Image 1 (cartoon, helix red, strand yellow):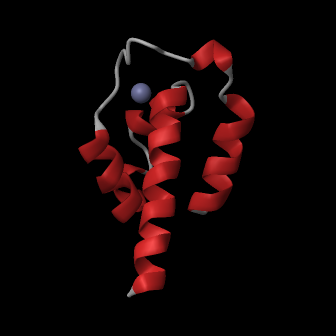
Image 2 (cartoon, protein in one colour; image 1 turned 90 degrees about the vertical axis):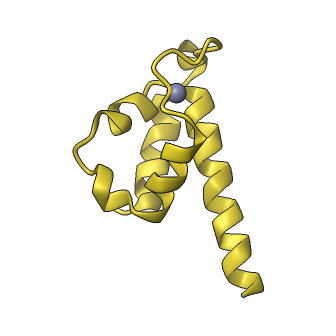
Length: 75
Ligand SMILES: [Zn+2]
């Protein structure tokens, strides 16, 4: 599964049921950055489970993806 498919799958799963306003169990932005750079490192990690259940993390992940894409286009 590539990153795009992963995000599409998360978007189907994650709903307002997963708003997680208190960010319980969140790993933080630095871990999400690591995931964007080296997704294979997290192939079997709890982070993937978490992302499927945490809307704020998913939003941050998508932001990181678009930031990276923009950076590539500039470079
Ligand atoms: Zn989270």
